[in-house]
Length: 178
Image 1: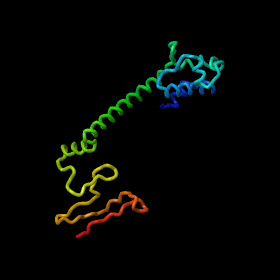
Image 2: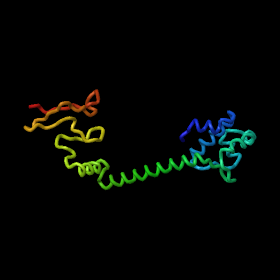
Image 3: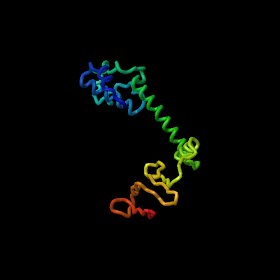
Image 4: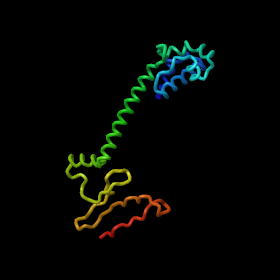
């Protein structure tokens, strides 16, 4: 739950320490459950970690922040934040399902990106010794092929980790330069 300190203090500056604690526990429970709080004084006192007598003493002050319809207490700001959260969650869920569907069809997201790149630029990826490196991007690590077929490598790629060496890298064999 996003907590905007300046907004909170502007709205709740008049609360006592006990009222701040009760209010914070109520809004945190509201956010955690994702739904309105019950209107029962016993339940609200339990959520606020207060006795029913103490709850009934501070209830009128705390009730200012909520809309009470007899069955539940709703909080406008939290409802708006929950709507934003649910919207983002639904979009991420839909994107995840679409990605899973593409993978199950044998087409990964990376393959689709490569195809899009090829449509835009017929030279993508350019000729050379391209590989998929640890970052997931296509890279030739600066290696090109000379006209006579010899490999020219201004810098060598770092080895990938393996269980064979102490440092976690694997042995890399480089072709002889001509």
